[in-house]
Length: 395
Image 1 (tube, helix red, strand yellow):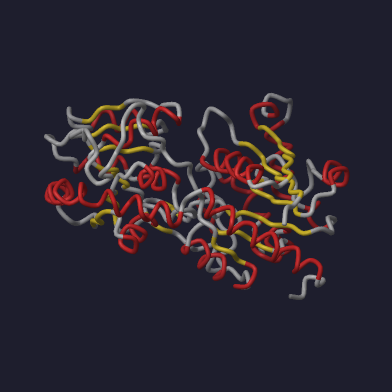
Image 2 (cartoon, one colour):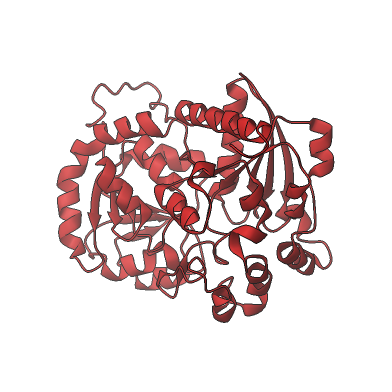
């Protein structure tokens, strides 16, 4: 069965590369390829942020839930399902209570539970707001380090599920990791309304004119390790570089507020290569020794860079505090290390083991993270959401 689906998404600034933006666009194309009719109702921060009083208007929208609404477009398009991805900060939320059709929401992060969206504060996991301390975010200025900037989010989330129209209204809520499912269940979302559907990435085509007969033994492996991601506190790169062995080569792809600090402390064997176009980055990944994932926060999703590493047959060295660390242990796609363990020995062991893990990485990718697997799961989610709405929301 095919559906008419409208995606509602507020796009983050293009200057800050967003996995959510990329995932939403890829998902629309996947559904179109499967024969569904897809429409997009969007708000673009790039276009809106130059308007007078933009920060004040978005603060009011976030705090009250009233603001830009997709209702007019939805009533014209008359979709079977409205699929909400991101409303922050350009769309209001109150319109959800007026829409009578089926609604699916994807919870890309912990924004509905945490002003910072990361469950991370001052170098450690923080679940004070999830656990009922409703004004903790305001006390600590968790959004952009500012109490003023945090105030609208703290007010909007003061009663969590009951005051969030998406969490209370959606027929199905898509979570992107086991951890995210557990956190939202802990916050009061009934188990039957949560659906675990990990993201996907497209398969990497083989290099032109080549044929890999043995995936675990690619034609050429670089001696370098690779880090890909935002260069910010919660991503753990700064702590990683403080411990990085001087003789081990590492390439860093990405940008962020800690870039200059990381440059200053990095050993000479570390290269900072900036942000590459996505296709070029994926082309380079298969040649590396392995991906380093030092994140210190609880990721709400199974990160796209992890999926892309598996598609590139690249094993992962992750730290035990991260979502990817748990995935690596469960799926056998690399190694994990604690922050108190010697890094040099772990890198040496990974260098010996990772070439044999390439076939395993490819198998896990094929079974779990392909476009086909994602589409099949989402078609079930849409069907369940429609059944729930048709039963009056009682199923």
